[in-house]
Image (cartoon, rainbow, N blue to C red; front, side, top):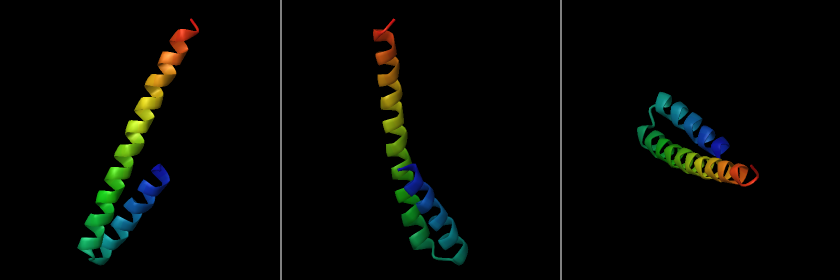
Length: 57
């Protein structure tokens, strides 16, 4: 998922440099959403890992 967020971010930078502001803002929005989803999933797995680690101690 982070791979796709990075791809959309790069596309946003390229289209912004070329002057396609509509496409640039759309791809930047998609990149933000994908990064947010990836961050939430990471935090959920981090909490689950800490909870699983406490069960064995």
